[in-house]
Length: 111
Image 1 (cartoon, helix red, strand yellow):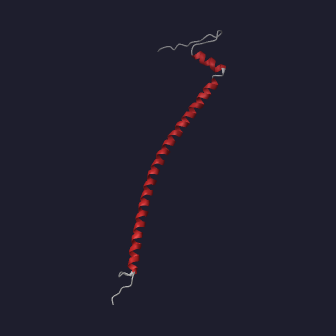
Image 2: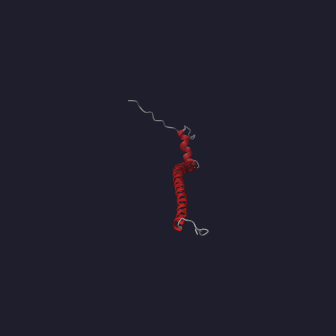
Image 3: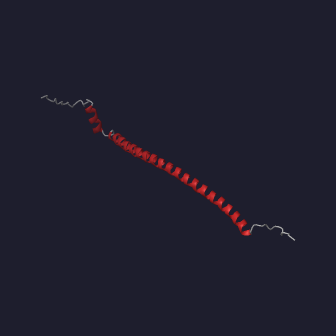
């Protein structure tokens, strides 16, 4: 009589499982490849940003060091202004003298 059992197909069961497994594997591999490409792109972009930020940080640190040196120099000059001898030297350079002092000026002779 030519009856077929219910639920059975004419295709062998090994091929049906293989086709579904192959489809899932291709879907999974596509997902993995897309994820790896995305992760690589993000890595490269962030590496470039880190490089830019590092160079900016280096210039800022150099600027800070220069500013600190200048600040130390200014503090030293301020501390020298508290010394009466230094104040006297600055006054003499500008032409001010004490009443008992006599300025001596040396003229250079021209050849």
